[in-house]
Image 1: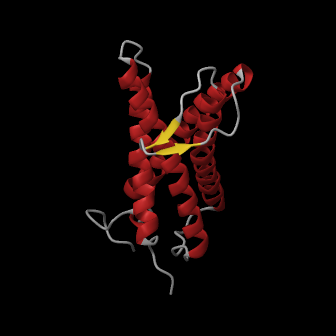
Image 2: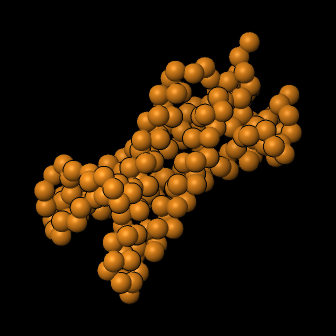
Length: 185
């Protein structure tokens, strides 16, 4: 019989992604403060790039685990809801992979070439050289992808809360650590 919950490692990666995304949003806001000293801004940019690349790696790991590990037993819901949930999840995964890629291409194409240092230790090669057109396109795409991610995350969270507190079907419990939520039926 299949489990009613996701594998614990997938659960940890899910919530870790949320924490890292929140950190990225916070760092992005701090990075825009042009009154901050250059060393401080450089450090913020390096942290932002490091977390972005980490999110991409963890997302790839999570996708691999979803393919390798069995999915939990399905919660009963109409077909349109299952289709909508799948589309939102696919969109979230796409954004979580495309955001770091557009970010890396953006810094690679930037007119001012600043190295990317993964957590200050490992130099990450830039795949392309400076190009104002590519830089501007990647910047616009990066910002649009983040807005899309924010909307999809809000829909995802709203649907999970709707299932938990209105429909009371235990859907959220499948991706939770087992503390404080009603047991699955």
